[in-house]
Image 1 (cartoon, one colour):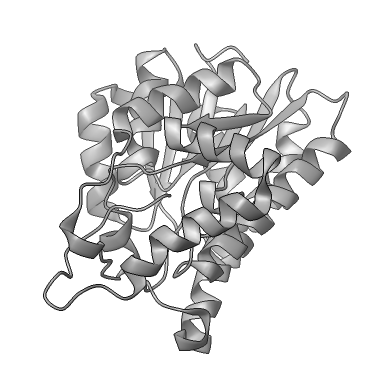
Image 2 (cartoon, rainbow, N blue to C red):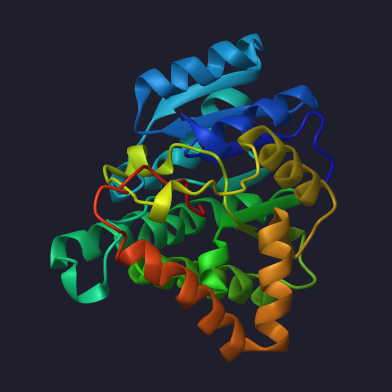
Length: 276
């Protein structure tokens, strides 16, 4: 897909990968309608973009059905049309076992990660199908391919996004709409803080991660190339390969590593960056 002069709607644009995707799109000459529930974060994104009227900001919670249904009209009112939608808005839950999660925590993760993605896709697909070339891009996760103990419901929500997104791809084969799914590994963003949870890392070890700036560049390039799956980071590419070759071995290997995180030594609870 050609990026220059195209109009993109981006959710989760107030921070992290969403912000960096907006900045990369603008750098490549696109126009962007940036959506987030955080008005201050959106203003910061627009200021960093420094692109005048090529970036518009809109405060929207993707769990609000009425606000989501109005999003296409909002973009068209400002930019005239929309060529692509990138669903990045998402959250994690507390780093704990499934049985320790409350029903409310479970519902929140599913509403933001899955139901929000479905609602935004449903709102925009009719207008995307009217464009000569268009794209729908949804954010899954490495946790959609390989299970991570302590983030089981998060992984399940992202695995559902994967199946939903790739199912839409299958339904739209041969149409003017390209569908891509993003699978980031460990990205150095503030996903934990934005999700309202505290994460841990056993022993305070350093976790190798991809910068959000690099992730933004890879995502936009993947869209430009019409990639079916956009894998971000060496960890995502390696674990994706291992999971296909030896799924049980890979699951056991990751589970052994995560066991120490779920039961850290006393006094070793420090913040951890995790997969998005």
